[in-house]
Image (cartoon, rainbow, N blue to C red; front, side, top):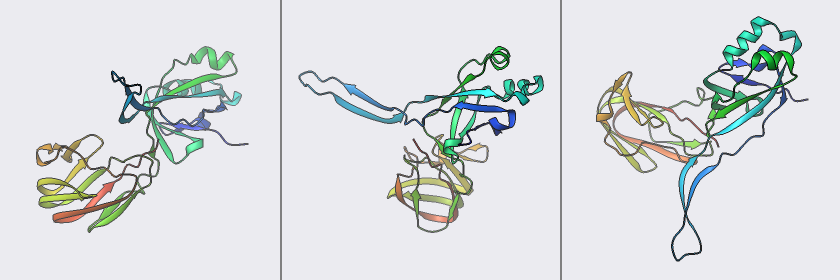
Length: 235
């Protein structure tokens, strides 16, 4: 029998006596594609926005009788609230960004009924639980393999000075007047040094990304090394 569990905000369901009655299926998120009617044409024109919709993971649970005490119930009430990282036992190497969607009537459901439902509203793209081990450092032209299923939005810190051109798959990104180091965060579309905003040093409309599969990364300028948090993502 498979050992089902989930981890929300670093607390495992097993540690608070929650037992899984029914686990959700793994879902491929819905892709946002617009269908536009064109007068005089029988077929629609489809516009792919290259984004995905969030969805709900519902987990049916029960409480182990040995854990039915007020102290533990209070802990569960406090824990199953708000936003956080979610890991489910079916995908131990992935992280969902999630929030608790439904109201859980703890006092009545846990004490009186055999099971209750937890609904996690999750973002469509999953991250890697091993992201720390996937951090890269380079000091010369290199190749990086995107192991995810969609383009990744990396965080790139350039250690160097002066004007630097970062080159990813032949696309150039100019950063001016670097003083020791600077960070380019493609997920949040920000450039900074520690807590200091340095967007004015970034001379580009787009931000770096790694396409699925093999990517080339290179640079021009006075660069000691480049640290890359690749942020691999899966649908």
